[in-house]
Image (tube, rainbow, N blue to C red; front, side, top):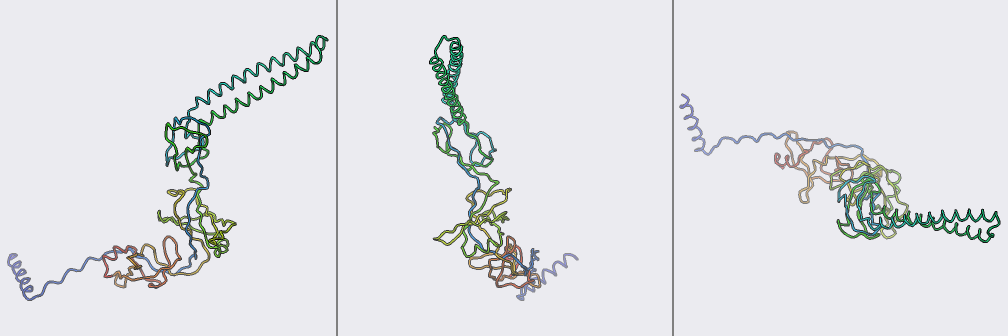
Length: 349
């Protein structure tokens, strides 16, 4: 019986094929799409300007004595703590100079002691009328001269000790090494750069804004910084307008103090500063829903049957890291797909 039924089914399919009719194709499986609503809400109105991240504390450590570099403790990208040794310079010549200065100090101390004893003896003999006042005066002069020479030798020894300490270069503050200018074994001379570093806990961004917008920026005092390379937005701690303007470009520099716990941000990174200049209601669409194809900017709108439909839109400038203003092409309440690529494969755009 089963074989007979199978033969009937094959015969029916063959008859349909002979008549030019084929069985209807199967409907494609429904694809679940994440979607969000287009909404009208009040947002900050901003004006944008290109900015550059810089370090508040950035310095280059240079050699203060001559000598061969015998130790390099850190390289580019290493984290250094305040007081750690970063470079050592051969200190043998400085050590010999210090030893010579200390020997001269001991010699001067002995001479000063002898001069003091001689002065005391001359005073005693003067009391007994054995020497003249001139001899006592000369003894006092010799003692003062010995004291002055001792002071000079002590100063020289202190300078030699300080110079020897320059052979050990330490970090002036905690930070990150951004450049190393020497190699092990090279000759260091006074003023030669050794390493450059910056403090990552004190960063800021600097932007130039048109003078016409300075008043609104000062009145608001609020701004956010966008790092396009990291796809990240940062809340600015403080906005400072510099009290000077560039007469050629008619712009004013503005500093934006950044938080201390930033990761992945370093001096020289390009940024975009968004200064708040007011608030107003705007129609917003999620940034994740927007895609760009050549000169087309569009979204996939979910219709009443759950099918995504391609629609071209025109964007504005207002918004934040999650949503952007839409000027034309959408209405409040419409739902858009948050995965444009997936929606394009499932829909009939």
